[in-house]
Image (cartoon, rainbow, N blue to C red):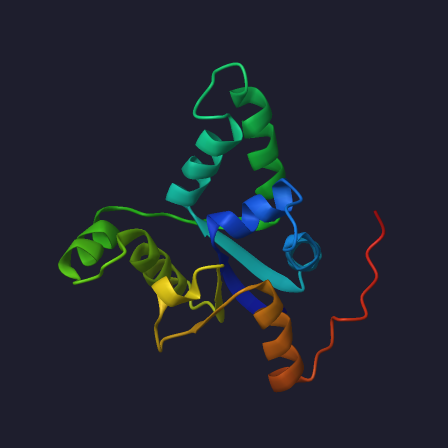
Length: 156
């Protein structure tokens, strides 16, 4: 059974795919742990389409095959929560200031996530789940479940 269920923000996934510092190491550890079943990782269908667009440099047809290949790789260990009429109507009925952030919060609640992992925790404030960055996930697991990931060595 997974130690934690997480909805990942698009920027967190891009940190992993583009090896962006200073976030790459903790993001990579989350992805590896997800791949081996330690974490249950999720994104929304709209985020997957955003990734396709961004990985193909704005929808460039010549780059789309590689972008889709990378998404297929992610799908081997990241599950997708669909966004449909109900989710959009619930978003439109809210008084949120940041619709994209609210959609992430709603999706995280729908999948019963333990964490919404993002760099923009301020925009995603909620008392329904823990909103944090990658480092915060590991801090929470250490403090609340006595699980230590700090010493995990990852070979290149």
